[in-house]
Length: 219
Image (cartoon, rainbow, N blue to C red; front, side, top):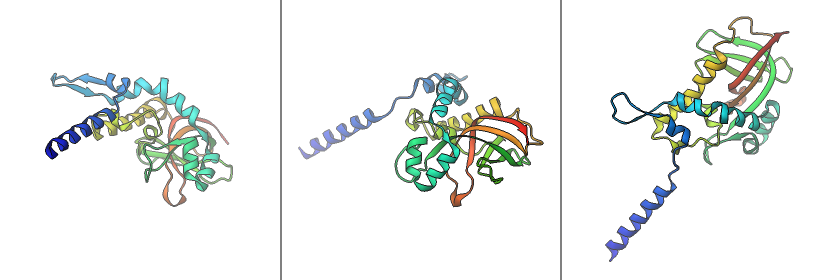
């Protein structure tokens, strides 16, 4: 009897875990294509991002974004309150919030000597950098993916797919927005940004990954 009871308990636990698994979203499923060898479906991260970019991602970011100065100041006082209003994190605990912000400012420095190019942006008008905005083509991190409350790790087969999906957001932004940006005479120009970031240690200006970015005239 004890053995039978143990077997029944294990079976019940297995059924519970199976029921808790989150099914892949329609977009992730649609991004799976049969490989050339016919061995099985192959995940296409770029196709998955394309399927949701205009319909879900941009509307979500625009609705969620807070004014950068407001978000920055609130996060300095209470990171959780700022995150609940203007951000997202996948689970509780030590995982940092990813904040979604919009900002208008002026470029005070440009670092374009490498593929991981950035611009320093003064938002509050004091002449100092308040944020560092990535302009690529190489973009660090997965802030855009991590800011979305409708994206779940459980929708992917493994960590590799999830990482590829995060990188595909950066590739989409680079193709749509960043690769057309000039690399010279950036300092002094006005800039408008919609993007996401996590807090940098030591009070450094946050590294913002843009979803939208436009440059205006110089000062």
